[in-house]
Image (tube, rainbow, N blue to C red):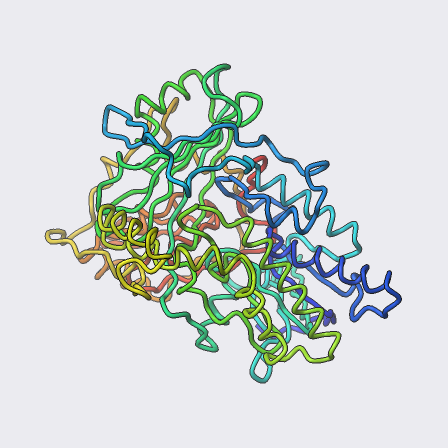
Length: 555
């Protein structure tokens, strides 16, 4: 469909209003103000900075554990404690190893899981607060606008085309059709979070891959109101072991919040071998453990969410710059998988990107030559110090828990080297083992259904995510060859999309006696696990019409 688009010009275009993107925008506004105060003509103006956010409002798609190391936020907003929505400081922490019936508290909490000085936060609320500071500075923030495609020009990018609104399922314009904008900018910053669709396209287009492919985990989370006295506000517990087997990397968390509220969840590395493993069911089973049950019993589920996290670390970082473009935050593989923290590194990377951009535009040169200062700034900062020390951490768990723990110990004494340096890994989807027996659809009747009180099925959880999409729009989960799903995948893997998706999006049905894939796109919580874990790599997640997706209020 060829349409005429309105063109807008910006100095800087930031795609994604998460911690990295908002930190970039806020730091740019600070640099503008500082130069004006010093009597210098600023290189750009705040009103020529645009931030695009696909969610219906700021923070709606922001989901995290979330324990925040405040070091980067303190650099960006020195007096943040006066106004930031910090739920509670961490007041105590512990690590447990679980068996099916018992919990064993480790005598010493491993240093990466020690959180004194950190804060338990709602990333949704923190993002709204940051966004308020950005808007107050004069930067333009546009919600309900998704970046549909990059504008490639020369050896780089020159902006973004936003998604068309008002397109029906049949791909034809409806009465309310509005074409997307052609947003051109001198510098485009991709701050989309894990597996961003534009970032994926950019990395593939220019072959920007790092030493290793990116690997991911899926995090599944619930927010509960519990009975008074069940857990102290600020208490943080992490768990290893049951219900995960030793060939799976992952664990659970339980965070005590104010007002008798609990955040709990489980994260599982997406490189397990059993194609019919169900991360959502594993998390629900986790809640039945006596250690967890005694906290939750008598309580009430408030919210649900799921997202992926980039585990690859320093060696999975793509080249973060091209002519006219930078990649920051989780999109740039800047999460510390050992500490399970990435908010602070995302904020710092956004700040460093802003400083790089300002210098480049002040010199009138937004080329890769000038923007190439960004990775140099990363290397000179504490981000490199922190991530270099864990550069081989997650790779060591690629073959299971016990080899991973051995490698982690070796890294601790070798400054991050571990058993090999660099320790290579393969994409997680390559680890699925083919099934030995099936010749037809795997029976779904025994799937985990939950008791409706402590444990829940996926559709009940999706309801608690606040997810909604415009029903009459093209499917944003593009399966390039559905025939593979109905034939090879049935026989070879048992259609793992039905299991790894935490939102019941994918369903195999029989039509005239033949298997057929049904995609329930309206359930999608935008975790992008399907794009990552599909064994044939034929699923492409693209943004739906702006404003669609989950509503992670208070999470």
